[in-house]
Length: 114
Length: 115
Image 1 (cartoon, rainbow over the protein chains, first blue to last red):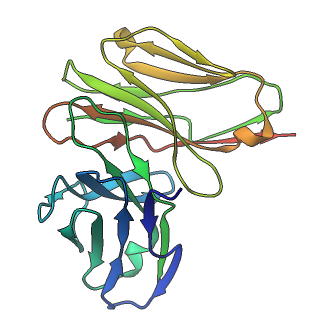
Image 2 (image 1 turned 135 degrees about the horizontal axis):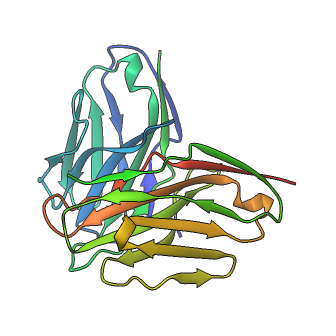
């Protein structure tokens, strides 16, 4: 009964590598989001998307980009990974309608950049 | 701009104690939604409650209760007779119906319930 799937649970990458984090949802949701979670800082919004090929910057977009070629898939890209991007990354989705009923989250990807 | 403050970084209690997690929010909107999520050690965030700004009724669900007070911009969460399984990080979050339609989270409170 998996609804939001993040491709990797744990990932170790080297500084300077290009890193792709994948997120797929099977609920036909229009909205998708990428957050990073760091101790003491909570969840901070990186990028989000309201529709295919649309993207909006969140609070901390520097060093990241995203791709949404299909409705069900939202990819987060670290153009050149750095050690300060070591973090837990959480993907979420929600339907687009009046009112708001919260997100469905994936299990997260813990990325370590060495 | 919107903001959510969870001033308690970490709380430790002994099983069966009651515990309250504080949440204070800031927004200029009149229509907004408040949430609490639980993040157990497994990592996945679990939805606990949603409350809209027009409904100030307190809510009780089993051992959980929520106190929403617009006058103090607070949405506090109380666990009665805590259990070890309540150990987790709890996040309060705010969603506004205008502008950027995305959740803003607090920094979280880590609750440790000792047996």
